Image (cartoon, rainbow, N blue to C red; front, side, top):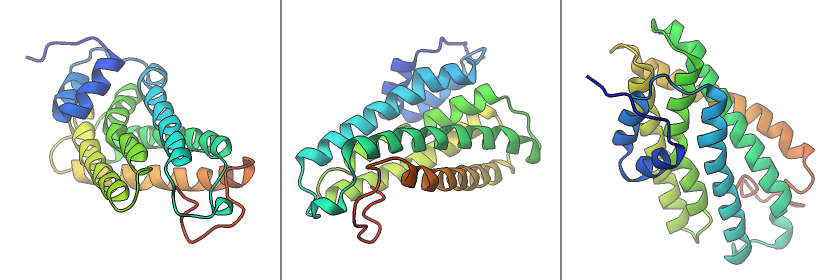
Length: 208
C-alpha cells in the first residue's frame, strides 16, 4: 500500500534531478494532490524562473560567437521565456487532463498539473545547460530534453494512472497539443514584447 506523502516542492525538485522515478512515486503518493494552481506556483514557476534567470545570465557572460544584433535583449527575452514556458506548462497539463477521457481514463487537473510539472524539470535544467558553448552545451541540453520526454511519459503513466494500452497515445497527444499551444502563443508573444527578438534573425538562433 502506498503511504501518502506531503507536497514538498523543494524536495520534489531535488529528487527529480537525482532519482526521477523516485520523484514520480513520491508525487503519485501525494494524497490529496494539491490544487493545480498551487503546484504551478509552488513547483513549476519557481524552477522555470531560476532556469530563465540562470540561462540569461550565462548568455551575458559566455560568448556566443554571434553578432550583438543577432542576440535578443536579456530582459525582453527573459520575460518572453517565462511567459512562454508558463503557457507551455499550463497548456500541456490541461491537454493531459482533457485527453485522458479520450483514452478511457479518469483524470483531475490537479494530478495532471503535478505529472507535467515533475516531467518538465529536466528540460528546464537543459535550458540552463544550453547556454554553455557548443557542442557540449547544446548536446547535453538535447539529452536532458529527451530525458524530460521520458519522464513525462512515466509521470503521466503513474500519477494519472492510465491503463496499459492507452498510455503511449495519451503521451503523444499531450506532447503534440502542449507544443502546438506553446508555438501559437509563443510566436505571438515574441513579436509583442520589446527586446524579445534580435534586430537580425540568423536562421533559428533567435529561438534560444
